[in-house]
Length: 273
Length: 136
Image 1 (spheres, rainbow over the protein chains, first blue to last red):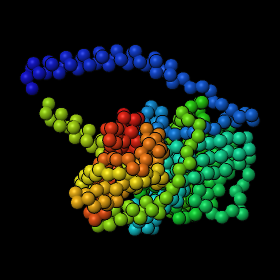
Image 2 (image 1 turned 90 degrees about the horizontal axis):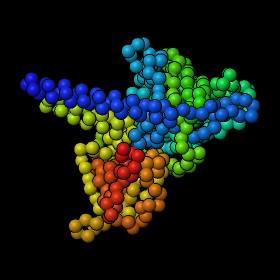
Image 3 (image 1 turned 120 degrees about the vertical axis):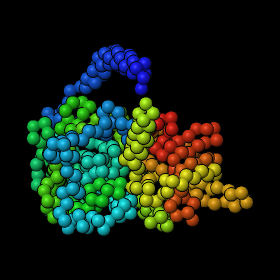
């Protein structure tokens, strides 16, 4: 590059820098004003009201905005290394079993939900949106994609021993200050932890503990720890997820016709294997 | 400078590919050949906004006048509806052009929907309106 060329680049960079500073200095105060959320709403008993439709700022397929769900990065992993995932903690026998499975074995293709959630948010299950209806006695968690629900009593009662194992398990809850703790057991072993072809089988010893904290009117933080001693070498500490309140107050009910979808996809792939 | 431009272009293409793959359900690549684009023009027979994926069925007339049924797979219904697609917008009998990728099995009249175009030029992508939030 010639000296003149270098000079042009430096000048252009300087001008761009000035413009950038000007734009940031004008828009930053406005952005700060917009981002002042209200206080945490509370129920009649004084506990935080977790009610609302929660998502990461957009549905699948859309560009995610500033309120997008954020997963904690370094937590659970050594500095500079990615945090562990459920499958990275597999025992050798679990890893060997997973190697025999592929995308076409994904139970969600047949309308079976996940045991946890593809985006590491149980409230979403397969999708990217979920709804909570909060009352002092019971908190109802509704997932949009596969008609899933969890009824979580808030009084700290023990798990039921008279219900069959299920895809989404049996949940009980209790408040610890302003944090709602949900303990879920009694899963079947015929689901995966995630969808989208992410091979992630688990055992029926799966045990998930989630901590929900509404930090302001628009923000819900969820932390979770997943144990599966038959499958994992150690508990999986799920990166903290930050959800935001969606601008609508009802999720949709959408039918699932997975068997036909799987048949069509199998046909499409027939000679491509 | 050329090298920089090339690096930016490569990075852009890679980023686009990664972003698309991140939202693509259930390994579309396992069923559809991303190197085999297909365009068909026909008449809508059925639109199914259902999980796990939406499907568009249409009748396509070939050069000899023979009608064949085609099926195109699109995105999740919630993603399509929240990104600009309106239920009931594309009814039975409406003429459309669909661009996508052909099934890996060449014998199947099937594809992954990339773009659906109405006669007036309005277009919809895998997750809804091409002019909607998904396109931004």
